[in-house]
Image (cartoon, rainbow, N blue to C red; front, side, top):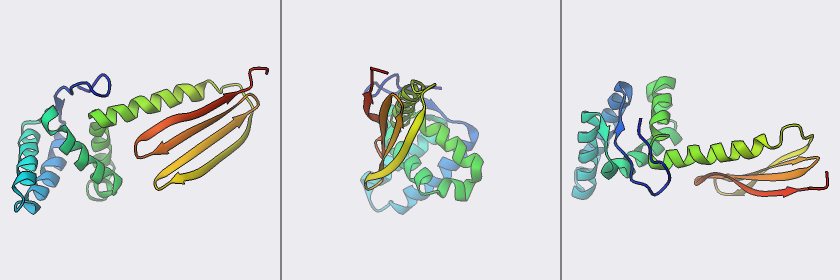
Length: 166
């Protein structure tokens, strides 16, 4: 399994599992046919399709792959057409792409922040919309207030106010 070590680094080749290959061949093949009248888009999808057939995705096609995975997973198409196994395998693949790997790193950072709340008494929880497709999740304890922002860019600790006198 390959993934970027940090955002901005060059991605190593992603090796596809059989189910990932099968689903992506079907989806990318259909897209390539639909955009055949647009030579630039068509050549981009054909290049990705060739890499899928080889079972290896290089950095040159990773952006196109991420876009397809994004649509398949967010729209529910992956689960609807390929069931939970198809959705799970495409999610696992997305997490190995540069953007997906960054999301995994973000969630690990937030999890570490949340683990610092262990042993504190929870006094309030709230979730509010902070824009289209964005939410702020606030936890108040007896010693701090932690706000987590969740949006299309990922998840991050937005603020942490601590009562150090406790």
